[in-house]
Image (cartoon, helix red, strand yellow):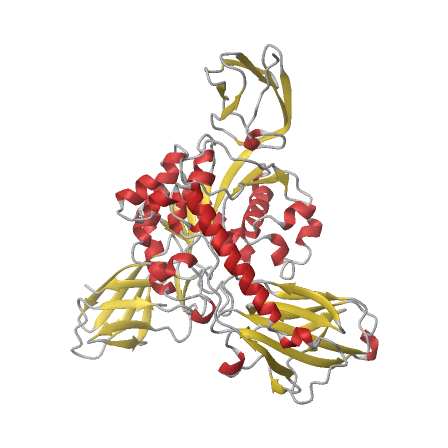
Length: 617
């Protein structure tokens, strides 16, 4: 019987392998067969084991492109085409790392259209959480070029980083994308590590039972389906066609999208908003974009009786196309609120844009509004990928034979509700992942949480940032300070190019010898009191410390928070002048200790200093 050859998805056509390292190249065929691998002038031979597994160790190879690999046994031959040697990076974390280029097209309107570089490639690891055992291979997937439609679904951070790196060194880049939106850190840790930390939940053994997952999944699906069905049935606005242009809304109340609403309109249930717009004559007939910002939670949006868009969860911006602007537009929004505090984000733009012109939807006329239904708060959906160890087993463990250049991580939002052990878990994650990739010196660069208002998800973020920074105690780590790069009113800031540049700079600095915990901006190391002065000493990594206007720090004393604003800059220290006789030794001093702080301290390149909490000695 003729044998077959199975090559893992990660190694198939278009794959990128790590340059200048000895790579594994493995697969499966018949039991105990000779297998030959040939490419360029290289010929390698090995023998499969009794289970058919074979593994070649490739010699180091400089950067190159478009190599064909031929693998053969006594009766079978396959050819893998267009294999590159370059630099491989793993992208990990949750939605801010995952946030794809299509979501960023308003901020970077020409990026997708102009992208032509087929030397930037990526592989999205399928979301397959498993609990019974660690998976040995990914279950599906293919290498794609970062161009056209395929670029639309690639991580923005990953793409901009790869683009910048390729521009500098012309080395092919391969991105392994593992980020999963909403995922907590426990999902990315192994059973062994969580048990060692005494953090394995009591119900963990149940997770290994597939019937348990199926039961939870079916119960949740039934609940979500029934909830949505009843929600739709109880909306009088749907029954009476409140979206229609000729509907009479004279008796409706009035609100403004850029101002706060009464609690009556924020409670769960269905809310309808309507507005009529007179379009200037010179814009009639144009195509346009309707930008309504973000909403909590879901929406259906209509223009002149026709549905132009709808999104069923809160985070994405509502940007819908309007074809052929008419003289009069009637906009109707059906806002579906599932949480206790719903609404439309007042600080976002609410506009129609066309031909470089803007029609402001936050004018003095406001919007008509009416409640169509009340409904109880919706229970959170069940996601098995959020359970402990599942993502590690199903998405990280199968990558263990790969050789890579670095790991880039952006995560923590989903752990801020229980931040106290995050620093310990995060350090263990870095160590464990380095073991997976067999490199204790593997650069691991992470993004510290940015500024964000608590209403939009930034709860406990000051404490969370401090937990994240503990990972800098490990060598070959880098931390990107993203204060000032966030958006107060959005959990998903869109300036990913800025973040990617900072990640790449950290990566280069580590490779250039800054191996003892590198930070993208100044980092306070200690605070001493000398007489009536405090001296805050910073590590600035060869740069100069800079202060912006109205700099202040805070001290916790006798149960109260006091501002310290009488400051001077002395080299790479901040001197704080205290009132006579004030002894603060043993007290905590903090900087930017809030969910949504502003940048007050930088280096001379403008990079923000890391927030901190230190004991005064």
